[in-house]
Amino acid sequence: MTATDAQDPANPAVRIRVVLADDQTLVRAGFRSMLDDEDDIEVVGEAADGEQALALARRLRPDVVLMDIRMPGLDGLEATRRITADPSLEGVRVVILTTFDVDDYVYGALRAGASGFLVKDTEPMELLHGVRVVARGDALIAPAVTRRLIAEFAGRSKQPDPGPRLNALTEREREVMGLVGAGLSNDEIAQRLVLSPATAKTHVSRIMTKLDVRDRAQLVILAYESGMITPGWLG
Image 1 (tube, rainbow, N blue to C red):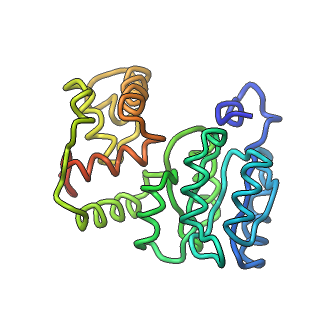
Image 2: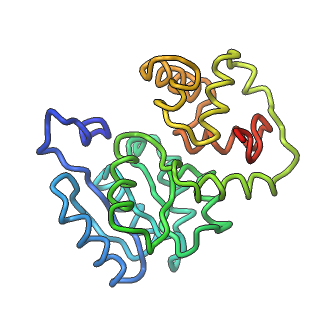
């Protein structure tokens, strides 16, 4: 099942398949209770450490893995890196679960290929929204806390280096990438640049292909690290 299939309104019987990875049984039980109550979401597996999460991802090919970042043995960061680096798991999206909204490990996980993150005490509706957003192929970067985290840690990184990769982009694509980096959705980009949402989406897809990045979260990080944008860029 693809992420697109999971969100196909013409096929409401198709569910978003989720794997929960957390070393605390009660935490997993709480998330399972919330997710399984939804008609379009199904928890298909649970893992208590990174090794189990990786094995379940390979065996079950879920749409989304909710991954605790601190687990015994193989931690969530390394498990995320291995999942996102495996070509056979291209359709598996990882959302990091963390106790704190600003965390060095979270930024590392986003760089490793995670599609976003949620704090563990998030409201149920935010959790459900996050799972659905990531399952349809978008990155969970809209919450201000995510943009703040990326901006903070990108600001601590080495001197911005645009590198040769960005040379492949047209001026319009650079403009679109900057807006993606600022956390704007396709609809918001379309409105700002006076484009159709479909055209904005096409630009974003082409940029990701040219730069060989997994999703929008990676574009956000690259936009900051390359110096294309800085915190507060949009004012």
